[in-house]
Image 1 (tube, rainbow, N blue to C red):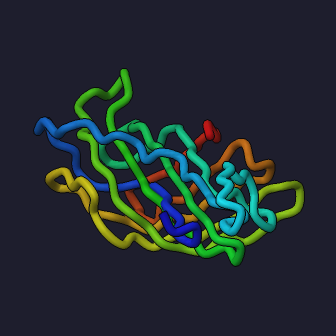
Image 2: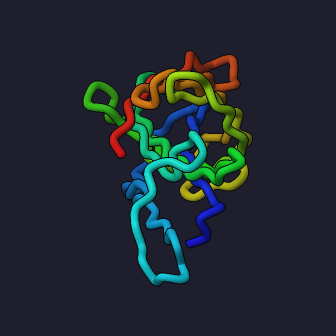
Image 3: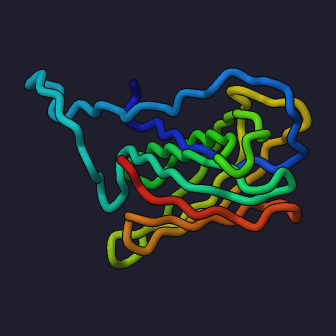
Length: 164
């Protein structure tokens, strides 16, 4: 996999339906090859202040109600990032379908190990009926918890915790 490619997951807004959709498996962590001349592969946790690959889980609220989100972000040393936004039901709202889309964006470093970012939706991976992709903004001050803004009037934002 190209180490310069990043993946992040975005929050979707729209109407929910009761239509059954196959579950989406969150993206896996990325193995980065450091020192390719030596043939040695290692997992690289940070590159110039950004996590190379990170996975964030939490919830968001839009028209369909409380929903789960897994945001997977991959970043290069310049802060160029790609993301995958996986969404679906929570125990209190099982009618939310699963879906996923890709985003591209740019991260900016913050003091204390955090970063902010802006992402534009780029492509559906799994699209439930009556859903649409929306851009998001993210912010983490400590690199452990993240809040986000979903740029659509029917959404209130999201909160996640880093799991990888």
